Length: 168
Image (cartoon, rainbow, N blue to C red; front, side, top):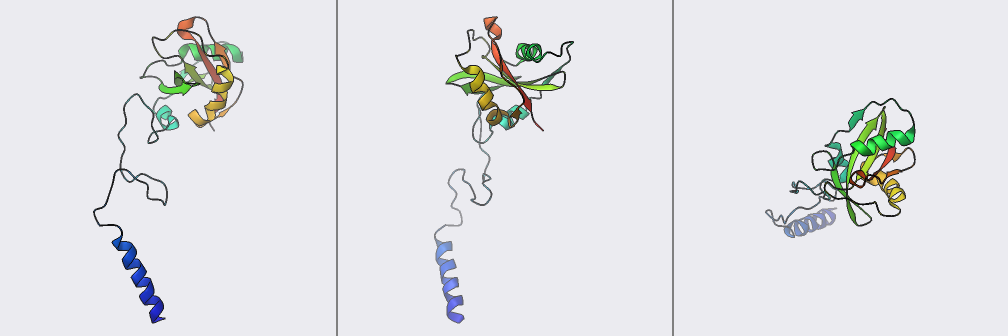
């Protein structure tokens, strides 16, 4: 019993000596719960691992709109038209290597994830943007898709896509 206790004390002492009392190098993970030991700095217009898209999107509350129509395609078109394009009302994301802006818009109680081209950028969405955006919605928003993706390509200044989502 004494040998076992002495061996355990020796092992603990040797392991404790491997790491100095003031040894801290950058931001690391504790290994227990994966929480960072220190705060990471972040540029205001980028999304990093420290603040993922779900957390960044939560900082921008959704726009809430009431319209007379109940048609899902028309509600998605309204959501796209009101989706954010700037830093104040959307977050940056990348879809198929192209920069886009992501925001949330609620139309008649139905929440939509909306992807728009960044402010000042004109043009059409890349081919296959609808299905690609629909597949990326759970990762970007933390919500599941509740319907198909709707695309709007005209006028070019307000091109975008909207996917109804369920965040319950």
